Image 1 (cartoon, one colour):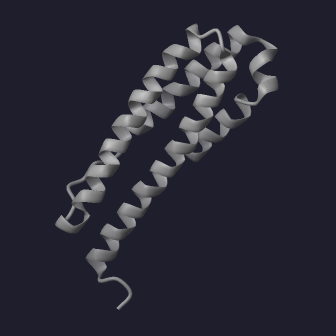
Image 2 (tube, rainbow, N blue to C red; image 1 turned 60 degrees about the vertical axis):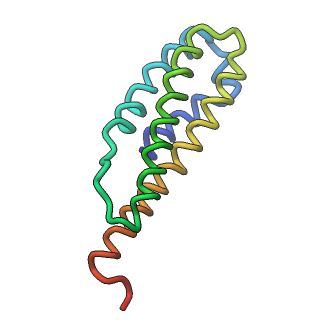
Length: 119
């Protein structure tokens, strides 16, 4: 996911946005597809009881990110204020990176439970 979102950060710089707005809109729209696909493909395993609340939070967060991504994928094509859309996309990408870190932390905690931690 990091390489997918890294390509977006360059695309969302103001000089990139205003060079050719229509080309920018379609490029962003195409680059949103793999981000959405990766969010959909996240493994949502059944967790042990002590991890279930955190796992449920990750699922709710993923669903919220997907809803924001779907709304922004439409706005990128029709919005007159491309700077606002670019800022919203930038914030979304940061939130996706934080979500991925929480997902990795949850997987690490699950593995740590199975092998007994540091003892």
